[in-house]
Length: 184
Image (cartoon, rainbow, N blue to C red; front, side, top):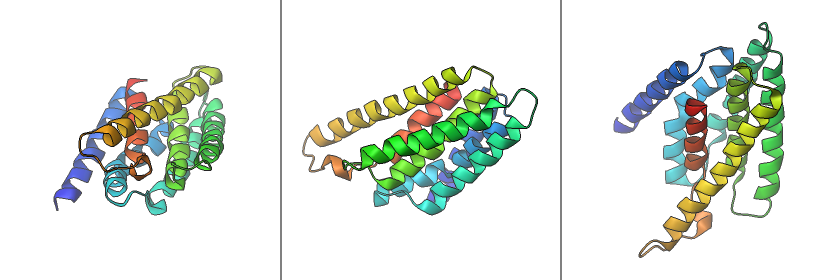
């Protein structure tokens, strides 16, 4: 019961913050879905060290619907291009990084959905496409830096028996995503 209450409160809080921070247009549909599943994804990744496709993959559909809908509005032509381009580029980039080990495919899929959602929200606000790509790139780099700091702290902590491969990356990706979405 407590987990369900936490999930509802987090989802409601992130949704309200998202709508208050931005224009709350159709491009936010993907981010609103992510607000609904963020707490569940964090709890699941911390407990199971994996991210369930059942929660991650529908996010891609919500991102696409929101981006296409926003692109149909006057002046919104670049939103779908930005969301699709950033999502696919992130998917490919993270998949290459995952091939070296230490990064799971759930993290790869989540990163692609988050990149698409972030690109859609930022692009709907109207900056040039290059600026949208820069924001998403900065998010990805900051996510890896934050993940490295968390991993280093956890592995080097007193009495720690953790290995870096045992650390969930989903909460870091989600935390940096929400930081960028709400502060952008």
